[in-house]
Length: 239
Image (cartoon, rainbow, N blue to C red):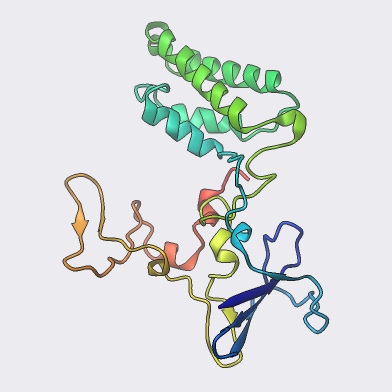
C-alpha cells in the first residue's frame, strides 16, 4: 500500500487530497475532503507528498506538552495538591496567556494563584501555604519544561499530529469527509485504532463479553456530540 497526499499548509495541518495505491494490484483511489475549498493543484501534483512515519510521529524528540496535560500530571503525581479547590482552573487561567519571558510567566503564575486563594479562601490560604507554594512551584516547573517564550516555542507552535486531542492529527484524513468518486470514505470510526475491552469509572466499569470492541462512551455525558465533533474541538481550548 502507498499513500500520497497534497497539503495546502506548511505544517500539514490541512490535507484536502489523498491518493491510495494498492501496490499489488495497481488499483488507485483518490479521496477529496468536501470540507476544504479546492485551492490546491492536483493536475500538476504540486505539493504531492508520500506519506511516511513523520507525517504522524512528528515529534521524535521534543514533546511540548499542553498545559492541561502537564498540570494533570502534577496533580496525579501529588506535587499539586488535590485539596486546593479550583487549582486547575487557576493554573489554566494563568497558562492560557502569552508571556514575553519565563520570569514574567513565573511572576504571573505566582501572583494570580496567591491572589485567588487569599481573596476566595482566606482561611485555607492561611493554613495551607505550604500546599499553595508547592502547587505554584510545580506549575512553574511544568511551564519551564514545555514553554519557551523567548524562543516562541510551545505546544501550538509545533502541533502534535499523533492522536486527535491536541490537534486534528488523525482527523486530517480520518474525518468522514474524504470521499472518492466511487463512494468510499476515509472513516473516523474509533475502532479502526482503538480496541476497547473495558471502560468506565471504578465501580461502574463496562467490560466486553468477547473480543469485540465496545462502543466508546464519553466519560462526561455529552449525548452524541462526540460523534458529531472532533475531539480536538473541545480538548484544544488553550489554542
